[in-house]
Length: 222
Image (spheres, rainbow, N blue to C red):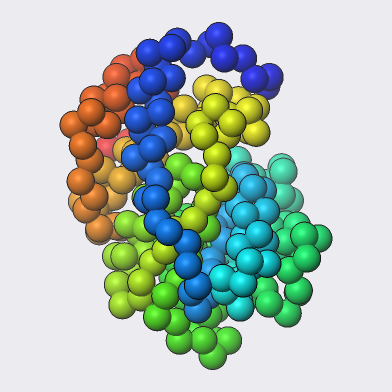
């Protein structure tokens, strides 16, 4: 689908930008013991992982992810496998990469990567999670629930919302994903999947307005 900014109103962009900013943790990247690149439809995660590896921020990188309905066609051999190949092409040595090829959701990304990391003899105190920009907060909340004893540092490609939309090429899909991820930030703590995160009133209002406007394809049934 082509990039067509006319399909979204200026007010909807403003509200989406509030949600976009909230999703990012704004952590200062710093050296950690190991990094986890979270699989998705977005190969930019692997690109950013390679950049941070080459910057010397971690000695070992895990790529995690099997397939989902949104990635099976793009990454037929699984998200982690394709991410690994992309990172190697960008100069990350194969021996620095661990593979977790089975995870089907964020909780499994964290839990199964933790097992792979332990099997490699690594006992980290600080872990970097590298994700899509709008997935930072949800991955942070999930990791804090499932792996509370390590410090979590979040990272993603340093893109503004409009640049990210252009990179994906489908503005409606990106806004649907922003809304869907915020719903999960709100709802998952009640299900035991993540820690609670405070949602500011203006962000919650923007979210509810975008839901009302029909950006709902990524919502889960509650």
